[in-house]
Amino acid sequence: MDPRGTRRSSAADGRRTLTFVPFDGSLRAAVFLERPNRFLCRVLLDGPPGAPMGDPVEAHLPDPGRLTELLVTGRRVLVEAAASPERRTRWTLRLARTPANDGWVSLDTTLPNRLLAQAFREAAGTGQDALEELPGWIMDRAEATFGPSRFDFLLKRAHATSGDSGMILEAKSVTLVEDGRALFPDAVTARGARHVREMADLARQGRPGTVIFVAQREDVESIEAAWEIDPDFADALAEARAAGIRVLGRRCRVTPEGVTLLGPVPVLDPAEG
Image (cartoon, rainbow, N blue to C red; front, side):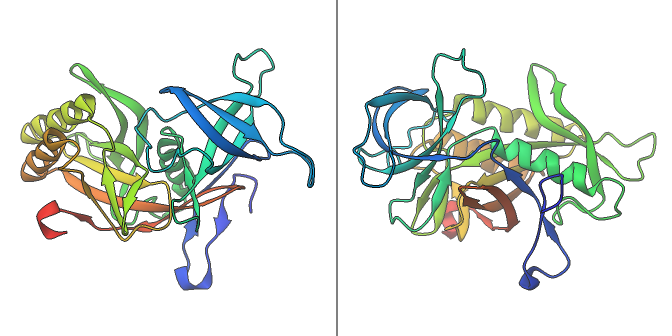
């Protein structure tokens, strides 16, 4: 691993370097107990081998989604100690085991943005593309505002001319998977539907855009809009595609050491699934 937190890919991945975001500190094993509200949960921390578990502690949950298939009483999780001793919740819930107990799922909705930003930073000045699906595009800035909304990234051409308007890139964090199908969202998201409709309007005015779904787990074969959960978002995504918005997918390798952004995953129209 180099000092920037990247890790060389395996031989099967050829010459590519995969972006890796490490956790700030060592994660501690725990067992999930309950979720009193969207951003708070209670867990039992593991003690030394052979020792009984301690009292329940509170942990911040950085994902407001439903997560009902992941946050089940008794599920193994990993938590990270808060950097500041003054913070009310001394722990943050980072990872949960998959329902099949064959891997980890990251529960931080901000992590896909950090992975993408780091991928663009690492590619800058190398002549390589940060995302092979978007050849020739580099990051102009994060959190670009157009009209009433703020989008995750504004990209620009590596050799932009004065007439180039740039491209909006919006990232969506995905945690729900059913039989290899990653589904977004796992709860109704009026904000998400509004965002992709606004991107469609901007595309019709000549500003291109891309939505990228980042599945924060590895057991993913395809990604699609969850029609059964949020038909309005699914409709908005279909409208955006018809307006020229590109829709991409990626999956991640998640370990107790950190998260690696892996290669492309197809994003299906649900009618194709």
